[in-house]
Image (tube, rainbow, N blue to C red; front, side):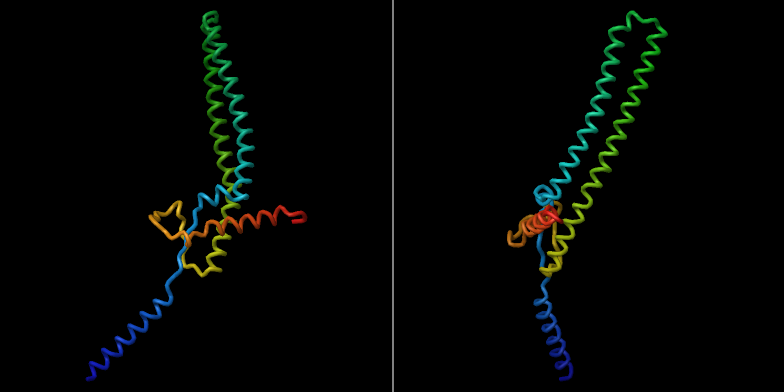
Length: 180
């Protein structure tokens, strides 16, 4: 009899814990970060700024490349009339310019990557801030990224992408407002 009471009490405890757990099902949603980055005004502004700066880098690289190419063409047309010493000196000069060009190219690529990071980081921080705000307000336990997580199928009602974009757009408009 005592064992039966113990089993019934244990069963009641397990069932009550199970029903309490069923009431506490964690809320899960997802976003599409690729779409957010592609469509948010902040990300578009950062990309546009980066493209403008990148065009200056490209212009410098193109000018250096064109100068090097002219140097090689001049050498090719004149090498048959040059003395061996002049030919060697010109070849060394071309190699030196080629090395300078490659070094500057690597330097500009590094600067471009750093600049992109500097422009993108505040945008990503803002996007993450908005997502976390939605997570807290909606009492979501987890928000997944459909563009980087293997989500095979999901209910579109769980997609918060448009809400994130709406809030980012509202913040961008507020930042653009006169006196902001």
